[in-house]
Length: 71
Image (cartoon, rainbow, N blue to C red):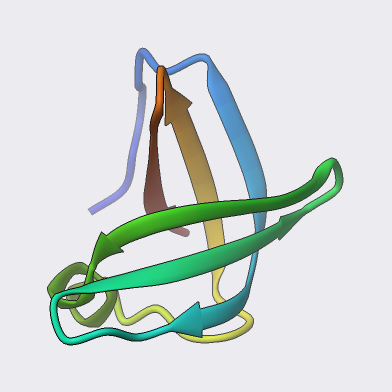
């Protein structure tokens, strides 16, 4: 699957710098040219997206939510 279009305007390309895994939720730190963006997502999503340190991602920021899309 690839993203062809999305309505979220605040998008930050970067690489996963660190993942702090929890039983239910995990913190994902994304290093971008503008600084670190941290997202709290379910650990299941970390596994489903096969995220790891160095993964290319886009942090999508809408209001107070930060989502992650793997590239």
